[in-house]
Amino acid sequence: MTTTRIYRRLVTLHSLAACLGCAVLAGLLTLSTAHAATPKRQDKTQAQPAGERHSSHVRLRLIDQSLESLPFGKGAEDVTAWVRARLDTTYGPRMKAALSSHQRDVVREQLERELQTFSSSRVVFDGARTGFEVSIVANEFVAGAEESLLLFREQGVEHYFFFSHDKFWKYARPLADDIAFTERLAVQTKDQGRPDSVLRGADQTTVTQAIWTSKDRRLRVQDARSLYRADLLVVEDRAVGDRIELIRGGRKPAKIGGDVDPDLDDFLDLQDTITN
Image (cartoon, rainbow, N blue to C red; front, side, top):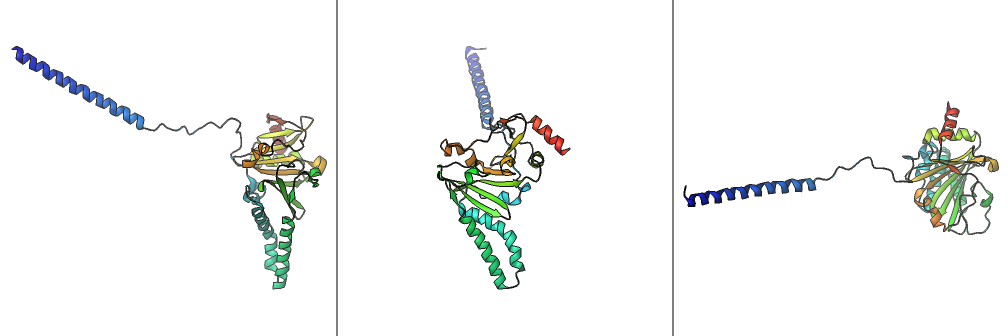
């Protein structure tokens, strides 16, 4: 074999090797690009943020269907519309049962009179004595923080609407002490599930309050019968409730005795005993 032919073969082999290397490199680049472009699978079971323990939802409809439509975050006009809708359930049948236009006018005037009474019930907590400082809702507001209240009295039931900077953020209603508080908690635990926290009295044994929290709402049921012969149901809008201390600028209402107990096991045992 001549030197020229050997040289030509070496050149050919070198060219083939170069082409093969390019093909391999191109293949690797393609695989790398495809892998980078493929989105990573999202972990559907994301951990709940620390300090955010709450129930999946608060079942207000099991307490009162109308509570689900409370206009949290709205002004007094929207709250008045909620009260009107509630009054319509009482006055609507009376209107239909009226035998004359005069009787219907009388019923309509009674409804409007109740709404006027509600609208004029507004109290601003500006530091002056209002009487609510010694009421069942004494710990639900502070003075000097642009807070106010509207009160709707409905056939012996009082509905309290609390406002912060003219926005409705908390609803409260006394509950008759016709059953033991432990029984009331048992009913709520059955309807709402495990409470997120409980408050105990000075003896560190008696449960005086339970709280259920969802993403948007906070439900509280507390024993106030030692002073007011009633329990208190409170529903808060968390959009304001979670920031209320900051909004109030450090002002705090009077504190009811007792400490929050994170260990609910014995409380739940008590409820099991009651319901079984």
